[in-house]
Length: 224
Image (spheres, rainbow, N blue to C red):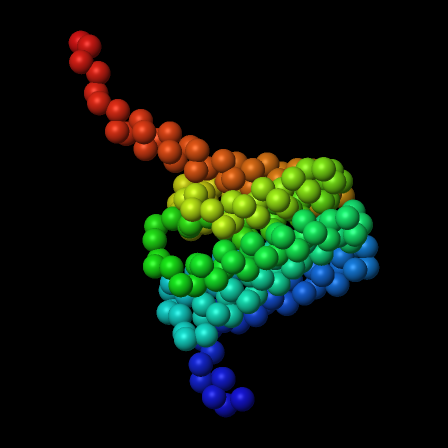
C-alpha cells in the first residue's frame, strides 16, 4: 500500500472519480434509472477533463496514463454499452460488445502513440456521451447505428481536435448550461438533445477542419 501511495499524484484522484462515476452509471442502468445513468456518464466526462487539466498543471505520475485509460474503459466503454442493453434489451448485446472492444483498442493505441495536437480517432469519452444521449432520447435505431459507427471512428485515423482546444470551450460551456437547465426543469429529453447535438457537431469537426485546411491552401485570387 505504501508503494502505491508514493506513485499516486493529484490528477490520479480525478481519474479514480471518473471510474467511480462510470460504475455508478452501470448500477443506475441496472436499476432502470437511465436518466441518472446518462448524467453520471456526463459527470465522468467532466472528471476526465479535470484529470487532464490537473496533469498539465501539476504534472503526471507513472500511474497516470494507465489509471486514466482503465477509468475511461469503465465510464465511456462499459457504462454506455450497458445502458443501451438495459434500455433496449439483449439485442443490443452484440453492438455493445463491439463498441466496448473498439473502445479498448482505441485506448490501447493512444497509450503507445506519440502525443500530437489532435486525437487519432474519435475520443471514447465523446463516443460514450453520444451513445448515452441517444438512449435517453429513446431512439433504438439511432443508438444501434451509433454503436457501430462510433466504434469504427474510434479505431480510425480520423483526426479530432482535443477538448482543451480554446475554440471548443464556449460551445461546450453553453451546451452544458442548457443541458443543466433542461435537467433542472424536468425536461430530460431537452438535456439529452442538447448533449447529442453538441457531440454531433464534434463528430463532424474533422470535416470542418479539412475544409479550413483546404481553404488555407487555396492560392489567392488574381482578380483585381
